[in-house]
Length: 391
Image (tube, rainbow, N blue to C red):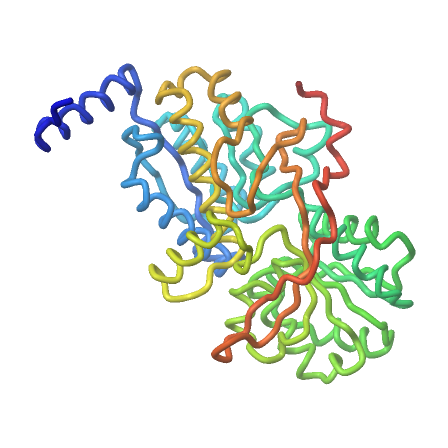
């Protein structure tokens, strides 16, 4: 068999790609970012995860030209709703992603669903969209809000803490968080405190904790909220007698970098960690460290996975994203290599996945990092899936 000259081979490949994507339209993705506001640190992590995955694909999805629309909406539901409406009506986006907060997800969801725009949530997993209000155009690609907290509750019960206090900001994800922890813990908690979203001064809450003297405290305080709380909690000397537990979001790389040594020994639960020993995760962590000079957080990993999932789905439908039913089937298939390992969706289009216990330790070179200890849940189905009537 005679080999083609390189210039002819390149031309043949180009023609093959053109034939494969014949009839494909330019794909449009709206990414509403949290670069200011209460979730700014988390949004910056997600931004970097998105951008790395996009760069690795030369700005395309499935080999198809793609336009990525990105704009900060500061974690504000009204701003996000206006942004989503503009992208839907004027720019005709095919896919939407980006918001960190569940309050934003609930605000933009109905608008997107009415126009049959697929919303792949890289973080928020509100219980409403997991149960009776599940929707064929919503994919909770990260986790369902309660699940991390259920895993933490199960861990706390296994350690036989007698008196456990729980705390979260008063917004949808915070409410899901404490409900999830109580479900996993399986017995009454000593106290339940809701703080203001975005709160940074916890003097009153720390005074209450000192008076209550619980054995353990569970917090869901992501981003700057957790950074400030943990510093104040340790500074007040409460860590000497109260074991601090959180979901991964309250003890992830963004928090560890900002808080430092007071994070040591904090237990937390997660569906992924940078030390996972599978090929996609190792490649992602290495590429992220090379690109940004730091260890990626859960938020970065989740955003990275969203682009991988979109890439696989667009390739599956050969760029014909106007065929909504075909796109939905391709998304449900989840034919991408997740950093989590094997990936599948449940009936409500939320992940069926494992959850792990981690602890913050000092690793080689003195860097503080999470170390994976053991699996808490295996192939966990969220608490709301049975309420979803989708097929």
